[in-house]
Length: 390
Image (tube, rainbow, N blue to C red):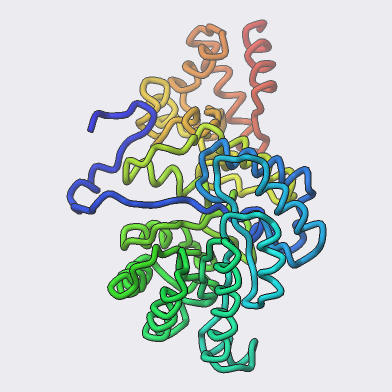
């Protein structure tokens, strides 16, 4: 494979002899992302986000939980009828009444979920696994009878006995479900246990498998990729990793990782930063400045050694170019800036300083940053002009 100038490929993957991944992305920002405490998307915001997700090339958009309200149902139905290239789905409890509402939304498929872990059965449902499964299959049958695809999802699947999961998924196959899904609802998995769990299910279940990872231990993206390596087809994500508690697997991280590690480049990553900004604005939740891919500092460099190298070849300290994800590079002057790096930054700004002027400017910068005063681009421009006039 030829070297791509936009990013460095992880060549160590060549030694793993993995088969090509067969995956699709189901983004759940409009549903699970909206379950972030305090977040509510308006109809217009949901339409705008669905349009943007579609333009990125996301395969499936989970647009909402239509039984929640009449307005929620209306927007789920509207998104389903927008003529997007992405398929659409929505969430439903294991109740025929929920599925009736979902069927009326014209989605391509409905995600019908139950939890089968002992904890959820005892403390949430107060019913046996057999009772819950029977109700779920009644809801599944209703959806199938009305021509709607079904994803049968095991909430808290990562804390459910593997043999119970296998038995439930095998039984669900008899109802011709289109997908079975494992939810790591509380984010307890790590990459090794995720790979094992998915591999075990794949040994006996032939229906395409989905993985839905939460980020309580900060491993949702890594777990999602491990699941893909083990044979999971549908990978669930949210923009900016928003969602309940610590959020979900990050769309931007998963898409760029799929490119760097596995050569999957069919998604338009150049729109990820704009999409991140939209979710930031609509949700009121700003990603950490050090958030991978879309954080404010994702392409910011201050260290003098780093800046010097970046000016000659950006790939020295950037795994992928900011342009590849619609971002921008920022060369920061501060406490760690050296004279050579400062010279490069100043010249990029269109100025030329003598050696004496550079030394004088660097001294002023060090004095400012030692007292924790940052140097903004406009402030640096002023300082350059002041130095040249002296």
